[in-house]
Length: 144
Image (cartoon, rainbow, N blue to C red; front, side, top):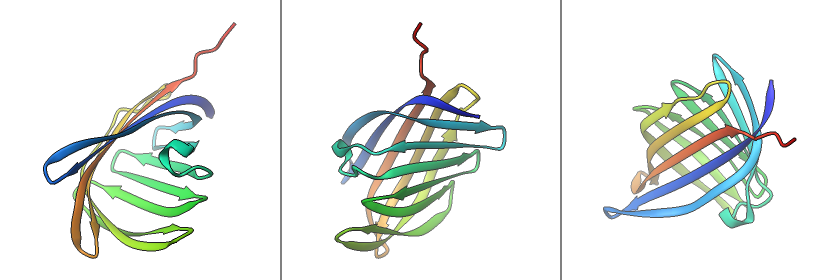
């Protein structure tokens, strides 16, 4: 069953041994929970530089698939301990990138919860950065 939720996404990027906090995005979205997996969807904000892009996350205990459609088109697959390649397509061109997932933890239930993904980002087989997404999902409070 689809629920309206409040989603908080915090990103941290480590470049040359220094953590750089990215913008924290707080947005509304939809949450469809099933015991074998979750679908989380939201529209990106202009603040992230991805305005007009819809992001869908298909979350299972062993993998997360992040799909974006709009000003950016991509599909990233995160599986703990695995390397995956993907195409990152924008209006200005496309890049072939890779992710190597180091950590993937979820505590999602029918009311929401947390997802943490830590991964290395590569371009042309060269290391770019270590990245972390911290995603919190909670049901929207009903007003009377």
